[in-house]
Structures are given as C-alpha cells and as structure tokens.
Length: 400
Ligand code: ADP
Ligand code: MG
Image (tube, protein in one colour):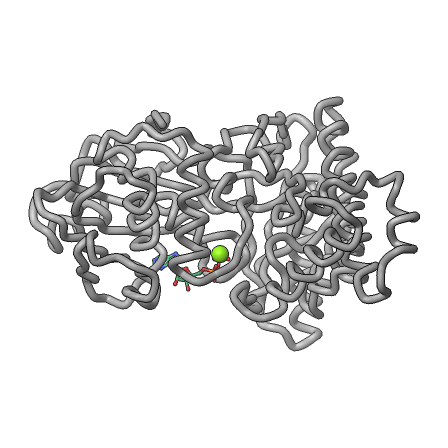
C-alpha cells in the first residue's frame, strides 16, 4: 500500500521544527537514540450503522475519526522488535521477531507485536524495528484504539520493509493480530475502517469480500455535527457475551442452510424466523434488519439526504437494545437524552456493553445536546461522559 502523506489532518505533527517540538520524536530519540526513519498513523473509528454484521459476512458503514495512533519507527539490522507506548506500561518490550508466537507477549504490547507476527506468519520478509507509539484515540471507549494500534504498526512495517501491501490485506493481518495473537475475537470492520477510510466519507464495507466504497458524508454542508459520547463504561469484547452472540448467529445460519446471515434477504426474514428456535429469533432479526439499514443509509447519503440518517440510527439502537441486548443503562440514557434534546438520531456504536454513543445533531443544537446528556448522566449518578466532535477523517497513512 502506498499511504497518502498528509500533514494537514494531524496538526500536532510539526514537520519543520522536528524532534524538539514533537514529543513523539523527542521520546523516540530518548528511548532509542537518533531519529525514526518515518512516522505513520492510523485512526480510531465510529461505525455509523451496521453493528455486529461483520462476523455475519454483512455490511457496515464506519468512518475514521480525527483521533489517531502514531508510530515513530526505524528498521533494525537484526531480528529484535522493540516496542514502547506513551500509553503503555512505561517499559520497552523486547522480543525477537522469530520468537513471536501467540502467548509470547502479554498486556498492551500484544497488539503491536501481533501485527508484526501476522506479517511474518503470512510469509512477508520482516525483521526487527524500534517503535515508539503515541495515540489520541481514547482506549476502551468502543472507538477501536486496538485496531488503530495494530493498523498503525502494520502500516509502519509495510513502509519500513517496502511491502506495499493493499489496504484490505493490511486490515486482514491486523485483524488476525487481534484474533489470534491478542486473543480478542473481533470482526474485520474496525481494521478496514482504520486502514481504508478517506477524509469526508464513510466506508461502505462488504465484510465477506472486503469490497468497499467511499460514500460522501458531508456534515458541514447540512449544518450537522456528529457527536461522540463516551459513556466511560468499559466494554470487554473478549468476554463471553460476544463469543456467545457470534456462536448464536453461526448456529442460526447453519439451521437455515445459509453460509452466513448475510445471505438471508430481508424479505425472507419472517419465514426464516418461523423456522428458528425462539432464542435465535431476536439475533437474526437484528442482523438482517441491520444489513438493510446499512443499505438504506447508503441510499440516503448518495441522495445527499444526510439528515435522513437520523431515524436509521435510532432504529439501529432500538434493535441493539431490544433484540441483540448489548446496550446498557448508560448507552440507553445517552441516546434518549440526545434525541430528546434535538438530535436527529443516536445509537451506541462499537461492540456494545458500554462504550460510545453517536448522535447526529443540527450543529446549532450540539451544545444543548451535550448539555442534556451531561445533565442526565449527573442525575443518574453516572460519571461525566467524554465528548468529541467527529469529522470523517483519513485512514492509515505515512505522516513523515
Ligand atoms: P477499544 O479498541 O474500544 O479502544 P479494546 O479493549 O479493544 O478497546 O482495546 C484497548 C486496549 O488496547 C488497551 O487496554 C491497550 O491494551 C491497547 N491499546 C490501545 N491503544 C494503545 C496505545 N496507544 N498504547 C498502548 N496500548 C494501547
Ligand atoms: Mg478494540
């Protein structure tokens, strides 16, 4: 892959004044001596619609956040991988690339180490490197800091070792890092968003083929804001609930004689639900109607009707709350408060069990919406939520 070089979207990177001005470069020098060979970045994401569809071979519509994970990196002549993160444990993790195997690295460093392992295991000729990482993506907020980290390291290695891999291949390897090395059974959507998104657009993703297209998502022209409300309730994708839901979907597809739930058209849903055991009905109803909501969202965006996304978001939330049952008091409250204060629509985004909520809001009402959510949280005795304004941003790229 030949990532775009972009100095505009990460305004904290100062090309001219170099290492003295940028803590990323300064810390790299303090840790390893000298300058990195380059700086790469990969963003966090929010999913606009299409939740828990990726592992059903279905569709999603994520966009990259302005917040990103940066990696300052330099190739080594030997096989040693050295990893350090400003958000890590304060130590440098050292391991030979040849010694990487699932279980060999624990803690935060298993995500970046896993990305290098996945490249090596796929047969790419990669050796050692010194890496220092720094991120503005909130961790554990459902905004995919884990994918940003894996993808930033994958794209840095792609550049350092001249691999020139296509974006979807880097995303697949980053997902493999998370699944097989970090031990988290996520789908492909997070990594595809982090690698393949472009500024100003959402990514219409087919999770089966990894075909994707960029759908213009122009908030400014419509005087809209996309608020991201971090409920600060930590979800854990690695826990049993995710695996159970996934297994339920796979069982339903088998019972229906389909390769995946993506192969059940929405107009055959009623008939299919009558053939399934009761406990699988709400799961299948969510997945199939969610794929239909993605298709409808794309139609509305292509028609230039961005405000019409609102009701789809709220309907998607109801489906996650009532059918998929992965919302929680904080995400429900954020959605209700945002819509009551004038948001056109809102939904939880990401794996569930907490995490973040997005709210599509007329820009003029954004302060009222954030105020209403903050007040509702205080009244309910929840911690104050984190608040971000999201603009669709550029995916993984080389910065310097
Ligand atoms: P999310 O991806 O929604 O942010 P996850 O639980 O999947 O939440 O991933 C968060 C974990 O990823 C952190 O606990 C940490 O181990 C790791 N991580 C993410 N970003 C960084 C970073 N910049 N430095 C160190 N570790 C990170
Ligand atoms: Mg994650």
